[in-house]
Image: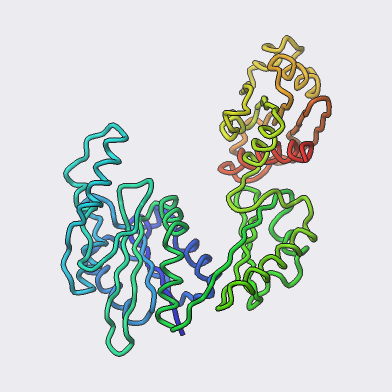
Length: 405
């Protein structure tokens, strides 16, 4: 059986200062590819400990994914431990060095000498490009006796960089290695549907058996800032059949969830609304109290007509020449007239002391205006402070989306 394991590097993880989100992400990704993950290991910044962990992993697993420890500082020892575990030395990749220097130049900075170590890799390794970071990853095959060979894929620990590199090449490398080790070349077809307006358990309840383990194709469900993502993955030797199964499952999801599905792939509510407005030649202005400019930051500059942020000082009604207690609809229509925008979206005030746990419900109004059509609703303030702004911004975009479509 082809198996994988995941190793995360860093004292900040073993000390509890940071939570290891990379292992969870990679495990979900591998499960969707049908690759069982049998071990998770977290190891501190000790070359001796890392080398021992790498050797054990390479002996027992076909695929070893490693994240972290590729930086330029003295405690970044992943490349050294990997080369020691594989029994090879480190060699410099000049093209990687050139690209690292180029990144510093683009950012208007002088590259410290310590960053040169990031262009060194175990002999025989192939570089995995990091589009937006100075720490390239690498892949390396290692002999493991009678069991044949194992492969390590090594990525930086920055979650955004890891995910971009996994999407760009890591997933393909893992699948190619699985095919080589098993003697079967699998086609993998993926389709990602994104929904908003219902919780994770509610979405799952509307899709009976689709998310069951062992189903073909597999449907993974994840939640982030109110958006529920459904990733449909089919793997097999017949690519046409995989595509058909994925499309059939997507059809069922659309039928069951209706307009809860707002897009596919990397679509966000903000991008969907911005694209629709641009296609119809319309512009969007925003009024923000609780979200404090978060909505404005998500809108495409091509359609953004302006925004006002009110932190509780009464700036918005003053600017619009309205009474402090003017109805929200009147406020949106006044802003629409002032900006000349066809669309306006707004999120009302959050409670004072919003970082604290509330003892009673606090309704937050959300409103949207498109041409002459106005809609307003309210939601109880809630969620962790880290995600409450993104969730309410998404609610405003979703309300406007339903006017546009």
